[in-house]
Length: 586
Image 1 (cartoon, rainbow, N blue to C red):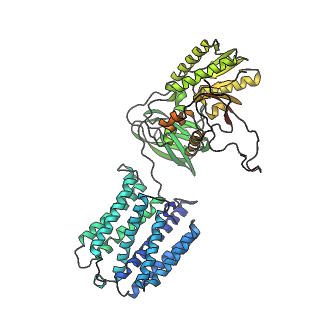
Image 2 (tube, rainbow, N blue to C red):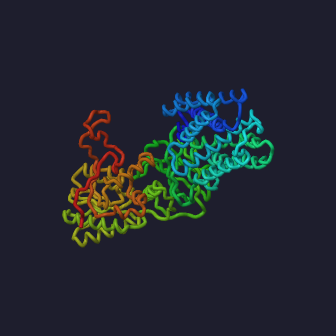
Image 3 (cartoon, helix red, strand yellow):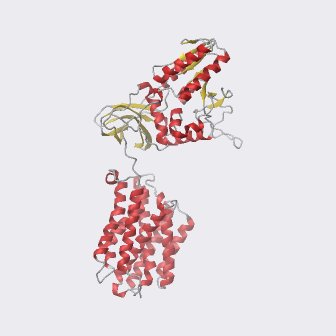
């Protein structure tokens, strides 16, 4: 029974709220019961009404624990122990020492129930908050029926204890507030999660101030009764915090925004790039389905469409300066996401290169790096890609095609790559042309849109007559599902093996973070950041193909260890494979 896994919803919002209220009532009643039993030895004979109060608390705690067994997943042993202790304490309080030990066991169980799965500082502050609140509740219950004069004289002074307990609650609440990651931004007062954190931190402070005002009075227990409501509400807020969704990070101008939105009954990941005034792209994964639109409140709402060479769908939006609400819709269902474009315009991004630029930025966001987008992969030809292309041309020269058919576009990267291909081919005595031929090798150094068009045209040409019989070759940055899957097989010069652990880990991370999105080279580089050099090795030619050597249906019996469904997690090529077909190119 762990309050940190309270469902925020379960089938319907009404059922989810009911489960949360059940859990909160259970924890609150149990904390009152445990605290009362722990402090029972401080008073003498118990009035009948106090016995009845303790019995009622025990009955409520046991009943709610039993009900929770039918409503949520609980650990059976913990449930049995909880019910047994809750029913035993009202009996054992007749023997103060026995009742105290049973109550301590129940208090420890409450701490475990509210702290399971947490460690370090989180576990410590959970323990402090629960224990301090339980003791406050214990004094409150006992003092309602036993006046201060009836308490036993010990070194255990109730007046100063109230300040100690209140101080512990305040410190634990402050640690929770500062460790939440919200800081003092507007989410503190603008979200339910932030307001709950304020309740946790502020209400115990109110109770502590009240305790200080009545510390010197004759009735040293009065402060507890006056502050009990504040501590109880703070305890409930503490227990409910895990059931409240944490608000997303505030948008930062110039940093592409990765968010999640609810459109109807579907949770959809959303990527906004570059989050600057003017034209931006909103990206949805293919798993989000069709019919999505995006726009700005009061502006045009544009439909998300497929873009050549890119997965999923993309919608253009015009962001105004400063903060605004991005509207996402499907039919009559609508939702909004807060965005902040800032005041300054970002880098100029060509429309055809924008999807690749956004997908590259996604890699950094998946790795929790929120870097301002200042450039795109198509802005320059990197040193490693330059070397890979040079080795590719030398490799093709050794195969002696009649010519290279080169496909390029006007982006700075493609212009530099095309120049490099021509110069390297010239040194090898290999002609370069724009036209396709039967004995040529196709080399594509354009961006995603041009690469997809080139592959689809090549596939159609090869279907009609012999064309590019020396193969179809793509620049490394064109390693992207829609592009390589446009043909039966294509090849790329790569400096890493997409089947190795690091590459597979990124593929899984991208899949999980963005609704099944396939990995891209730009995203992989940004995901690795400074560690990119550790996988940036020698160049090999890899062939990507739509291959399923042993096609089987997902439900068909198969041998142990055999993968029946080829669309498994970690693939770089959806419904395909990629393998090295050359040795290291020297």
